[in-house]
Amino acid sequence: MGTRFLEVRDLHAWYGESHVLHGVNFHVDEGEVVTLLGRNGAGRTSTLRAILGLTGSRTGSVKVLGTEVIGAPTHRIARLGIGYCPEERGIFASLSAQENLLLPPQLSDGGMSVEQIYAMFPNLKERAGSQGTRLSGGEQQMLAVARILRTGARLLLLDEISEGLAPVIVQKLAEVVVALRRQGYTIVMVEQNFRFAAPLADRFLVMEHGQVIQEFTQAELPARMERLHEYLGV
Image (cartoon, rainbow, N blue to C red; front, top):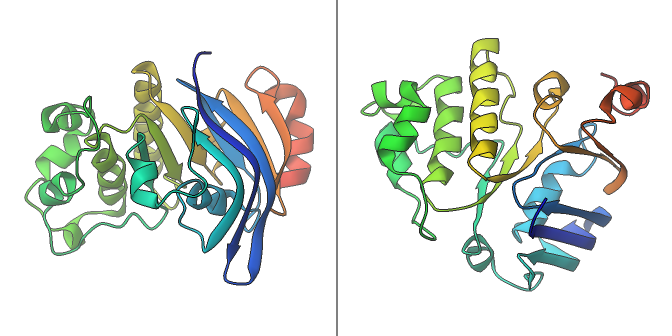
């Protein structure tokens, strides 16, 4: 596609004494959408966290736009243009939706303006003055995604953004992913909802036991469905 935005080689990670990643290898080119698939406990979320240095310790190689970051602190890795939307969303209950939106610092030029974000997420504009606790689950998820778009990040790590949401919200988030891809964002998604992820990604990586065991493209998806049933139970 273009520039290699992210390259992960022989990545191992630990939480305390628990060895959770066992030599993860993959890359993501600029402008690509890549989805990590696998059962719970396969290592998908830990992979996103390890990229940003949020696991207890890690070894191997993580390069962002050619810069090795395996020994760098999280804030320096983020400043290379990475935005992380964790599964738990991290909305501050005592702040309004707009205060939550404005909270993260701008890491680089090119972040979306509040007006652009509200055009993409009209619900958030309507709820701008509402406290985080008063937002629905879907609104909180939209806010969690929207919040990283202000920062100037161009690589988005999205962890289970469709989980537990009504179909109409899931459809809206799918439209957002498509729109972001058209705008040149690079996206790595962890998803359990295969129906949500299937039409969105350029490539799929199947993880098991802390390793990537299969990789295939959107074009190869129909031929791989039987194997995916075995791996994922979908």
